[in-house]
Image (cartoon, rainbow, N blue to C red; front, side):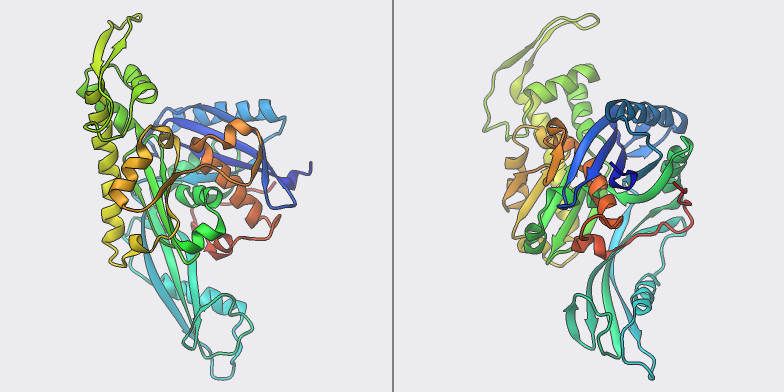
Length: 409
């Protein structure tokens, strides 16, 4: 296998560090060669709070991936998240010179720069500038304006920005391990690349990636990203609520959530008693199932309602236009009853989903908690020119200006 066909995605999550090693195939799919993972320490709500500890965890996951795949990892594609990220839509425009009526490549760059002529908070930096559509002299939704005749070029973009120093912490963690950073990708964008089909993007879909410390979400309409966001809430918060509400150790609360918990309406779900046996350092007890499910239900409902309120606050009526409905992925997608609760909140069809068009290690791509890391490999293959680029990849002009230097292979 040639080195240029191997892609490595690194996700530094709140509960786990994940390294996906994948090979790009000529048919546009990726084959997972192996996954390295280790429990995450030093990360809170998706952001690094202890650089040295996180670096040690990343090193462990990298070594695990190298042992399983026999691939020496030198360069990685990095997922990033955090509640400090914000997004907005904006239009840029450019009048062609009077002595020229043909649109050139550099005009696309100019119109993008013009779209970014906005006032960001002083501490923030652009992460992604994603084209939604081009317009030439009033002709809307032009796919490729280069070579067309025109006098005025306009373009609509979805722009994501975040706190520069908090982005830099992730980059410094990776670079401290002498790794080359190929690119930095928003977690929700990476996940959407592998859990949505092009048809679903065209119909309109909301992707919700529920991890341990954050919930990332992204809205597609007419094949383009229209809205995105990150909540500093995830599976860990559900576990913490169980621990406090039912007076259980965190480790016990996590096991109880996974094995017995449900996000279903507790008034409509089965009741009964759950018996927890004695363990070293823990005296057994009995838990009311309805009490457990009430705690889970309320927290998950809150997360979904916050997402719905944020999307509705855009004022564009997007939820009513999502023909493909809601897609839930991430570790919390395995929580019983979560799809039914999402349908109640969003009032549109909901599916639990995982990575598609992936081969190799079955247990990896069938697990929704790996969607982001697998999406990084798909993104890497596309931007590296090893398959025909999907529309979203073509639309990403992603530069974290001045935040890192790409290392040579």
